[in-house]
Image (cartoon, rainbow, N blue to C red; front, side, top):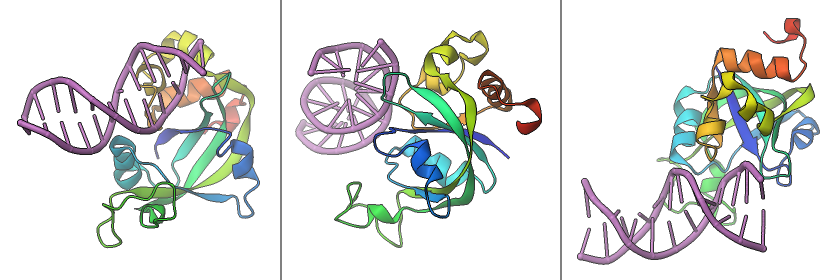
Length: 159
DNA sequence: GCCAACGTTGGC
DNA sequence: GCCAACGTTGGC
């Protein structure tokens, strides 16, 4: 199992929006960055867990946990001209873009702000700090444990 | 709202 | 295949 960090602008789609999904499952679509696409298509597997991160707000932060309930499959929004993320170069039999399905798990007792992540010398290797624009990022097990500890999650719930 | 960083596009 | 122009992201 691997760990990830997924970024979203809460004004567009927030952690609470995920919680309120009727079946608590959300197709994570619209990713149009090749590096992130490669993770979605090739690396992210069923059962992987992710940090849900709110970006582009006054205090960007990791706010909760979610998990992958369906591994990468072609992003249908790329095929629909009415969709914001329509890509004429993509087609049904030759998909360029991929999405996964995510499921709400639980909020962190305390959000972990970008500022506190940057201040933690153990987390300076995170892409969030180095390459902040990547919207889907791998997280090491060590980083996962540290952030959950910072977020006040009890040890027995971190596994 | 500004703007730096950086990913993508397209001319050559 | 380089690189300038352009568009987008996202912190501040």
